[in-house]
Image 1 (cartoon, rainbow, N blue to C red):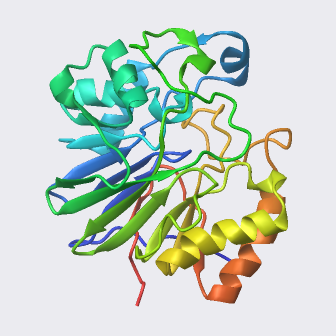
Image 2: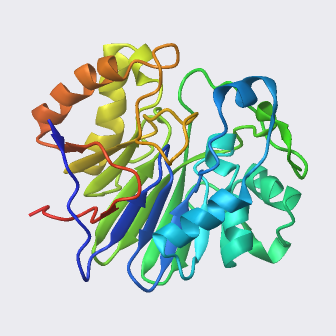
Length: 292
């Protein structure tokens, strides 16, 4: 069954889910952002037109979330639904943009200085305050529409396909309060998480509704099972062609089958005694709350 995430509490970590795999995480002294995709252009523009980040929507998100400072923005990979807005958050807050060379070229295209870019590879570890981030090479979910790398500064507006995948990361976030794995794409490299532990996994499920039951079982076992997670927060399930001013809803049937995904995932969660959470956009939650 779905659980509702525990509300944020003093002394814990505070997480705000912003749709897709965008997550703002803070301990009160240090604040980190994964992706920060809030522009969410509509389906027709994505398919037929040219897209660009909306700095006004980023500013509105900063104000709504009460972000006073931001230390780093890291991208799970470089598709537009992850990296389109990330450089704008950096420009507006002074944060460092972290990711692949493709992500760095997206930042360069919007005028970020080299001192505000940090390129990481498999196993690289970065410290921000009491957070330690470890970047682990992963793979995009099956059916990657925009494979490849961004080889030069990407200046928007541009076609959606200009935001190519680059490297895909699974990010282990360690803090004295607990450990979180942010695994945005519904795929994995066998054994990639051997020896890693996390109580909470933010698990990307986009596209799983089109995969076989065996694929889903392996994915669950190699990610959730491998790290010994006790709670899974589902990400990258929502229709990202709809703005964040409306409640989140699953992707349409032509893109994915949310009901089929849940029919395959929930028995695995029940088997392993893992809580499954469907997050609500903007809510302040405690990722580790009530995990006794």
